[in-house]
Amino acid sequence: MIDKRSPIPIYHQLEESIKQLIESGQLNPGDALPSEREYSDKFGISRMTVRQAIINLVNDRYLYRVKGKGTFVMEQKFEQNLHGLTSFTEDMKARGMEPSSKLINFEIIPANAKLASLLQIPEYGPVYEIQRIRLAEDIPMAFERTYISANLVQGLTSEIVKNSLYSYIEETLSMKIAGGRQVIEAAIANAEEVKLLEIPEHIPVLIMERSSRLEDNRIFEVVKSTYRADRYKFMIDLTRP
Image (cartoon, rainbow, N blue to C red; front, side):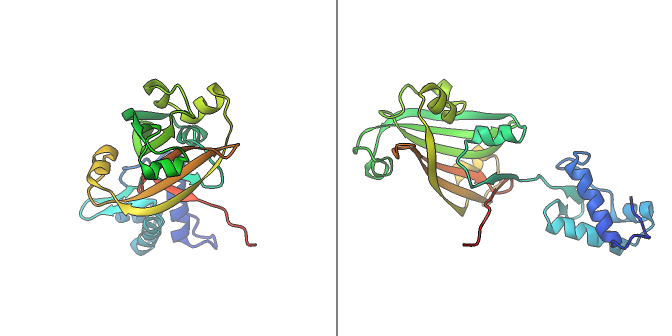
């Protein structure tokens, strides 16, 4: 609803009205918006005012434009707080979404020198190699490659790794996960990632590399994940020292 007597600029009122429709689910990702003329006629405001509201929403990544076709609602990104170590399953359930995994590969391999060093195990020691596509509501979100010492975390099966590894480690094996260290960088998706994540070629992705430790400081996993940059963002709270 537009209130022309309000001190709030009309373009901002329209902007907030469209935002509310998106955030409440009345407008869904991929839905087309009415044209500038339709908004102008509906509210009795200038097309320039409508255009300003639309431009602001495009800049804020609520909307996107397709030349010759119109303006559409953009898929909103999932936000992950970097302050705590949580699993993908825990993240998605906290958002009220149904997580799942598509297992690409599960086998035991001998650790090469680099992997042995990262996991703090002898070279050629047995390591689970787990490759999974992580999904939320059946939408591919990330391609994850996990390496776990088979002597430390025992009894893994393909059925277990289709769900939450962290739940198995903490609830079944009674091992306490204490924390980890991760590095995030931007990259361009390679051919394998394009195929598995169902994304266009040459699209940016977020690469996350993490090593996680138990409460006794033993490293139990090394993970390299490729996240869809169009669906995921990371957030961290900063405190000035």
